[in-house]
Length: 207
Image (tube, rainbow, N blue to C red; front, side, top):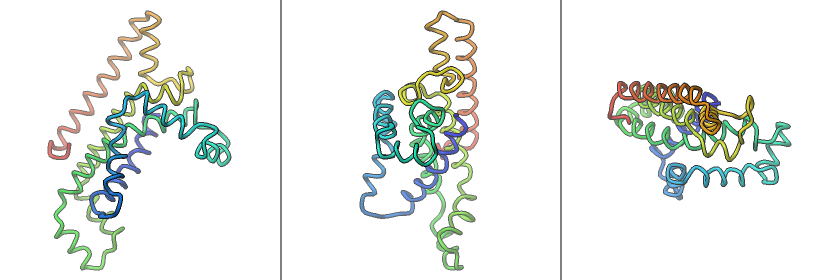
């Protein structure tokens, strides 16, 4: 679930970072605010909004179920979306900062050589900011792996289907299974530390 959520947040986050870094358009401030909103909302509130947006009676939920034959709420697919949403701002902020460090004259030179915006993005901007992109995606993965409240609200706690590591840790504590809880906490902590060390090595300026 965390890997798929990272893929979803990574693709959407890099695209949004490019639009916000390169574009000047009406409503840009609103897009920036909405992108950062998951950082400020409590996880339960964010999960509630996602339930309203993705529920089986909502337009989005009806379309998803009619198109793909499965609902999003209380499914592993819903858990992927729930974990991706709070990861998105970390990807956008980190990648956008990396894009901003690419010299404008380099992009201008590519444009004068006949490169369209897609070629500039794929062959100039992404390669020059790859460290920031990797850092952003890594932070997004750590956030997706550790999400608790939003995932629990949207996907529930169904063992073998939607139960993630943080939710399993909570269950272990509630049941008094301290050995299992300690092992899960150690695993999650090790992943978090590993990601932060890797991001630090990519360079503090892209965090």
